Length: 316
Ligand SMILES: NC(=O)c1ccc[n+]([C@@H]2O[C@H](COP(=O)([O-])OP(=O)(O)OC[C@H]3O[C@@H](n4cnc5c(N)ncnc54)[C@H](OP(=O)(O)O)[C@@H]3O)[C@@H](O)[C@H]2O)c1
Image (tube, rainbow, N blue to C red; front, side, top):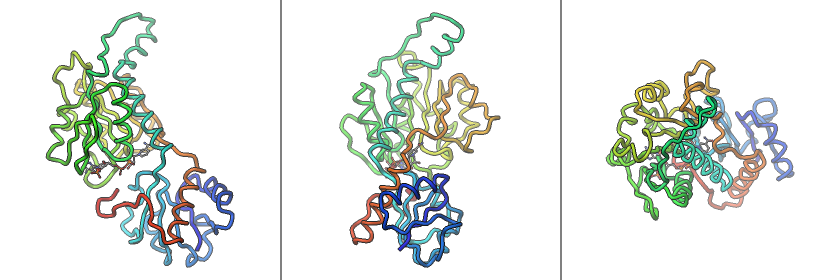
């Protein structure tokens, strides 16, 4: 059966990589080179046009180009076949590096030091020690758990929040909506790697920011910090700006946005306490994604269990 590459701007790179890794595989690109749609058994997909996958009568597997699958789940006609998401140690390490970098950046009050440097001002600012700072990881999945281990090694106090209860050494774990407020009240720097689902859309809003810890802020940080590397749909950008202006947030690092690319008119671009990156917290090479896709297709063909299958009920 043929593999169809659909939706991604990197289709040509995936095609070249798959042809090199699996020269015997029949690979096609949607829509020009799709050929006979009855031949297509597998799809490597990123944001396919809604309804397009449904037109493939013999489709048996969808491999997501990314770790998140919101780009597939919003298709009301997504066929009821296995969807596997991309999970890769290199991708995870890159996310861990992004989160550690942003946590350290704000713990060391770097946005203020950069401003002082611009003004040629030599000024001491009190920085909390890592052990004085509580990092709350929203999402304790593949990314969140790996970030927890790294942040602990850097000496931070680590908290985590997930849907189901976790037991991680040295991490205070909170679970479910009922424990969200307690988690937020015990967090100075909030780092989010939640998936975007109907439950999590817009969760990073002003009422939530107001619940972040303010006790002992003088010993810790000038105020709470938000880091979002999950999806832009998790955050309400007008609320982030308002919270920064009101001092309810001290700073933010945002890798994902409600609209991508972030429009030039967004006030986030120029805010002195906001770090903007272009959805590149964790990126993989086209070759690595192609290799993963081929492995999953081969596993299915051999009748072996698939890895990282998405729970369609939960939506991630
Ligand atoms: N910016 C980037 O470059 C980039 C790169 C890669 C991934 N991402 C984003 O990161 C996300 C997470 O990736 P991952 O591999 O860590 O996913 P994952 O392993 O599926 O982990 C998701 C975590 O979120 C928790 N969660 C989901 N819905 C929840 C809810 N309603 N309430 C509380 N907790 C909830 C899950 O709880 P349970 O453990 O109880 O299921 C789990 O701990 C992806 O979906 C993607 O959007 C972004």
